[in-house]
Image (cartoon, rainbow, N blue to C red; front, top):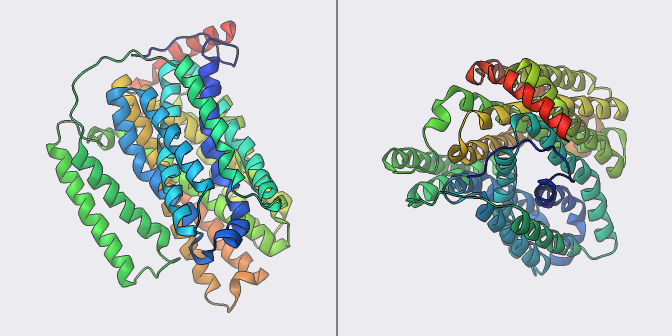
Length: 486
């Protein structure tokens, strides 16, 4: 199996080509999450389906979320390389088909294929980092990967706008082709695993029940209050069916020889609390991502580009703190580092909530930047703590569960925040275009984001130490060795 070595971190190190390939693969997903939004008017003008276009995003997120646990378990069986290459291949195929889509239903269906690919790319990138880098090196590498998201937050919307203005929206999908091919080629050439071959029994029943149940539950969360009322018959039926299938999944897993989602993932305190922390991170991040642009544009008449740049401050602050998180957790431990991060997050979200009634783009941008700093100090230590607590054959499931929790937090957060905002919009006819109503709704959302950040504090406080966190001294020695070598 792949073992950790300390050889320095950077593009010029022996593992540099692998790092570049992982950054390219991550960039595929990062850019895709922002580039499509700015091209929606052009897409709708060409293929129609205005009322269905929100599913371009919901279907993608749904497919990505439900596939993560399955890919994670399979990677512990057959290795990371086949799974990430499969994900890149699915993303490539989905991109090609999206580029030739002839109708909105077809485009949504092909976005599902893209989402299935993304569901393998992100967790496998994080897992490979955990495999080939030491504890001391991982935060630096997480900084490299986080910087991809920061760059994508600017490049994505800008590129989408350019393609849309030129009337060639299909190019936003075709541009993925060379990137997919390059990332795949570099991984095939540079990343090598030595896997102990053993006979495995794939838990097809568990995978099917998990995928179906989560599809329905996430679908209910995404559509509730948006496509249908929360208390409508269709909403109740979706949640009921999802709950029944999830109960069947739990029963099936107890009998499975190699369950797709082992019980120890939620029974170990560290893994459970880091997953809950990741859930909170997802809710806070997507709560701001979804509503800051609308708030600024509606309340201050700010242009979409300026509003997007204000939000980009969030993804600029994240990689800065993520890349420096190792300096903290190697000295004071994972839990204390995460506590510092979540405290910063709570204070900065409180500032956003308190100042929301008096919109100011500079205050919002500064607040988002500091929130990003806080989230970087929460997400990176909690993920690395979870990875450090397990061996290679469990790391894929642990990483996948952590990122899956973040996806679920994003979906549930967006659904809850949407319900809060819509309740205020409903009080005023045409409220979603009235500046005062937009301010009121956005303020309520920011308060809800603050509550999510406070609840995340509970999860971080409940985190236990990793092996008594005695490994921090050893990790510090690794850090000094890594610094001297690279």
